[in-house]
Amino acid sequence: MTDEKKQQYTLKISQASRTQLVVILYEMTLDYLKEAEDAAGNRDEAAFHTGIKRARACIHELSHSLNHEYPVSGNLLQLYLFADRTLIQADARQDAALLKEPEDMVRKLKDAYETISEQDDSGAVMENTQAVYAGLTYGRGALNESLADQGSSRGFRV
Image (tube, rainbow, N blue to C red; front, side, top):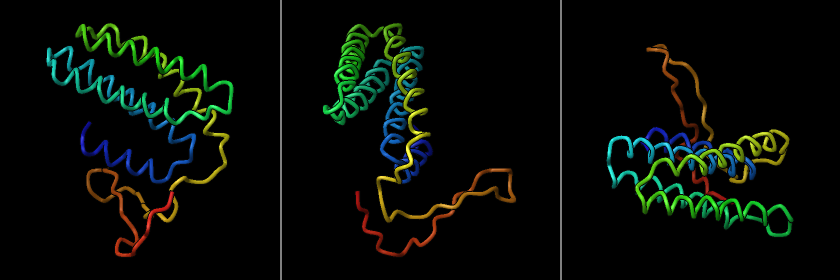
């Protein structure tokens, strides 16, 4: 993942609600699976392994963050375990074709959670974060982000 993409995810995470955090984890999983597929196409075994390892880490985070008070969490856990097993097989066999099923599953779950997150009116999980203002610069039409109040002690609270 590029530094620019990491910065984008950091910004999203700092301003996200609970359901938006789940969507972000799904997006990160899909990005890592894409990296693994690209690495397989380039015959780069180390990058293939790294992409799968990072996708599995996202899936583990999703499974560990389930609220087991709700019955649907059991179904989600089974889906996450299936995806994890399939990724282990893909890594062991160095087979990018095995990435398709977990990728499709994660994409469908991401779409479902995006719909749910539109209805989530709870605020951001992180409070007292740095304000970010974005706008077009006079240059080549690039988006320029400006951080406000950089010197204060923000004291992140979750």
